[in-house]
Amino acid sequence: MRQSCAACAGGALTDCTACAASHPFADNVSPAGTMACEADCTPLGKYANGTAQACAACDATCTTCSGPSSAECLSCATEAHPFLHGATCVAACPEQGFYVAVRGDGQATCAACAASCLSCSGPASTDCLSCPATLTPHLDDGACVATCPDGKHLDDYSGGASTCAACHATCATCGGAGNASCLTCTPGVTFSAGACVSSCATGLYERDGSCLACDASCLTCDLSASNCTSCASTSYYHALAGTNAGSCVAQCANGTYASSVRACESCDTSCATCSGSTAADCTSCPVS
Image (tube, rainbow, N blue to C red):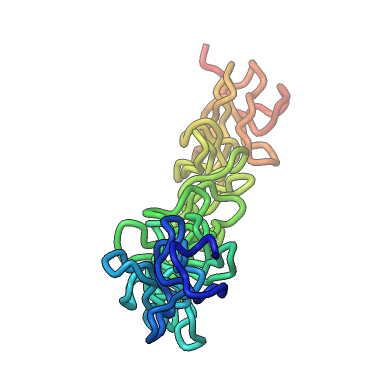
C-alpha cells in the first residue's frame, strides 16, 4: 500500500480509498471513490480545502494559489495576466507606485516603489522615473526631493516634470542656468550682480566675497567705496599722506600740481603753488 493511503483498492497512486495523516488532501476522486492523496496541493495548481480535506482548483488566472478566488494567486498562469500584483494576476503593473520585479522562481511581480517616487524602475529612492505633485515634486538624478540641493536649480517644467539641473560651475547656489543666475559663489570666486567672476570689473571693489560699487568720483577703488585707486579722465588722483588711501578731485589743491598721469604731486617746499616738482616750477610763493 502506498504511504499516502490509509486504505486503498490497488497499488496505484490514485487507488487510495482513505488518506494517510501525512497526505490528508484528496485529489482526483473517481466515481468509484478512489483518489490520490496529497501532502500539499500547491504544486498541482490547486489549493487545500480544509473543510473538504481535498485539493480544489485555483482560479483560471493562477498557476498556484492559496484559495479559490482570483485574488488568492501565488503565481500566474496566462500570458494575458502574467504579473502578480499582491495576490492577483494582472495584464500589467500599475504605472504609478510599482515596478516589475522577478522572483527567484521566475514569477514577475509588481513591487512597490520607494514612497518618494510616483513611478520608478526599482526599489531604491534613487530609482524614481517621475515624482508626485506634492512633498517630493522635483526629480534630482533619479531621486524625488522637496527642494533642489545646493549647486542645482529648479529647471523649467518639461513634459509635466520639474527637474533639478546643475548650476554654472562658478556658482555655489543659483536661481537658474548660466553664470548670470548665481546666488552665491564657489570659494575663490567673487559675486557680482548675479554672476560669479574671478575679479571685480572697473568701478567695483571686492568685499566679503561680493563686488560693490566704488564712489562715483573713482574710476577704481579698493577696500572701501571712497578709497579711490584711480580716477576718471576729468579728475585728478590725490593720495592721502601716510596712507594707502586716495580720493579723486576736480583740481589739485595749493601745494600740489597735476602730473602727466593726472595725479596731484607735492610742490617743492619753497612753493605755495607750482606747475612741477622743482623749486624752479613755483607759480607763487608762500606769504612770509
